[in-house]
Length: 150
Image 1 (tube, rainbow, N blue to C red):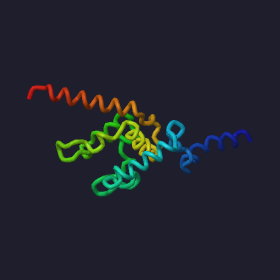
Image 2 (image 1 turned 30 degrees about the horizontal axis):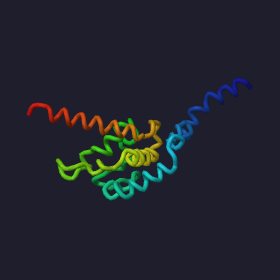
Image 3 (image 1 turned 60 degrees about the vertical axis):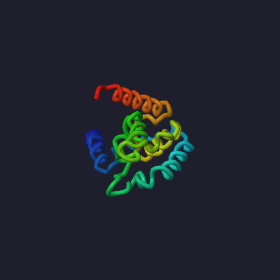
Image 4 (image 1 turned 120 degrees about the vertical axis):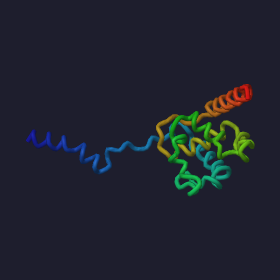
């Protein structure tokens, strides 16, 4: 009888994995980010981003692939802030101003967290302080480039 139980127990993990039960469920950022912030981010996304990017799940192919598959969306929060603010695609012309440079830090964080809510990322939510740091880093890089001999 013990041998049968042992065999059954040893066979459970492969069966569970084969059935898809062994996958970790997506991690939600909702305990750390309010539903109101996610809703605000969705609203801002729909008015400021969706025209070009389409939905986060489907994108706007062939030009824009789904954002929820982008490493910057599910990765480091600082990288996400930088992508929203300073992506080469977010400019008016090659040397023009960035489209979202005037969006406040809280709103940028809301858009980022709305996108993150679609991915199940286990990374920390995007916070306004992180967006502020992304702006500082970009300003420092601009100053360094301007000071460099041509």
